[in-house]
Amino acid sequence: MKLERLIGILSILLQREKVTAPELAEQFEVSRRTIQRDVESLCQAGIPISTAQGTGGGISIMEGYRVDRTLLTAPEMQAILAGLRSLDSVSGTRRYAQLMEKLSAGTSGLLPGGAHMLIDLSSWYKTSLPPKIELIQEAIERRRAIRFTYFSPKGETARTVEPYYLVFHWSTWYVWGWCRMREDFRLFKLNRMTELTAGEPFEPRFAPLPDLEPEQIFPAEYQVTVLFEPACRWRLVEEYGADRFTVEPDGRLRFTGGFPDADSVLSWVLTFGDKAELLEPEELREQLRDLTEALVCRYRRRD
Image (cartoon, rainbow, N blue to C red):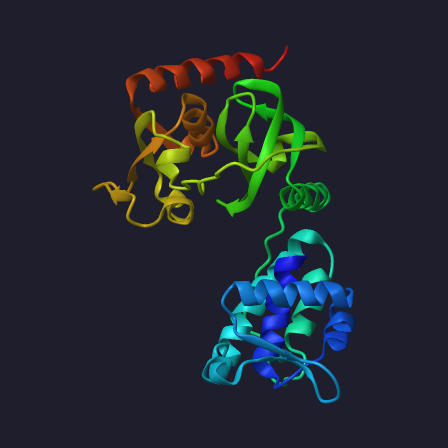
């Protein structure tokens, strides 16, 4: 991909005095003409690159820019490479590992075997996610709409979206784009998509970055209070942090928090079994009582 190649070329130029276009073309497996266009793109981005033809010629960063050759220290490069390595955990390929090898060309010590940071962005959906990510990534680069069937609490709908960003947040992958049905920008969870295909080209529009604050994506409709048994402390700490509950005199834990809908509250409380009691709001407490009574009827032993 072009962005990855530009980063790789810039890294090599920062580390080496001079490199030829044929060398770069061979290393990145593209044509010399593509390398020339990449160099032009770097120049347009403000990187002072000079080229010289003939024997002893090549591509280099201009002499006055030498002070910035220390832009990437070994620890900084390691941080970049850890991020690139994490993308391989999603794609299921060695594409980014190969890019790491190219980034470290002509240097030593940037890819030690004892790298101490490992980031795995994959999930339980290792089979279904990579093809979706690849298709959406290509659609974003080529400015093509995507079509899919989407499943949400409100039902099943067919959507056509102009994609702009792939987003990894809340341990889940999303696509941010213009939804033609809603005529607005929306965030779609990849795991809720089926029958995903690329569609027709679209004219890019101004795309604001998504506001990923929880209160924007999941506005709290219910403020709840739940009383937990002490054995639930580890899970409350893991899911919400140690400052979201207080300890009662009898040792039980009083939790307060906001939830976007009733189903989220009821399903969450039920996962704790008999170790949690929903205190407020009263209307949800009544719904939970009705639900548990219905479950008792359903699972009553048959004579």
